[in-house]
Image (tube, rainbow, N blue to C red; front, side, top):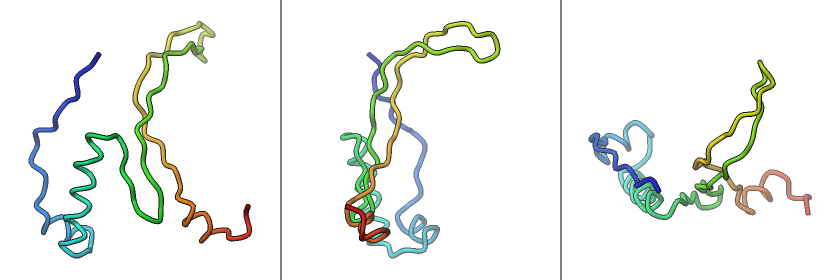
Length: 96
């Protein structure tokens, strides 16, 4: 089993992030806390919009399109976005 890798590069300060994103320092601090929490849980929630979820894919068999040869595709982690009900209703309120 692979161990999680910690990123050792220096991230910008909250004030620098706020300036780049064009939001208040409070909002930038909240985003920073959400990002830190998501590293541990694998879920990043954006209230009212949706959530980014880390999902594991199983090992599977695939095919090389150039040669037609069967190949084994290793398992890996991917990120999927799940839209919140509030966002769905805002876009198309008649869908049930």
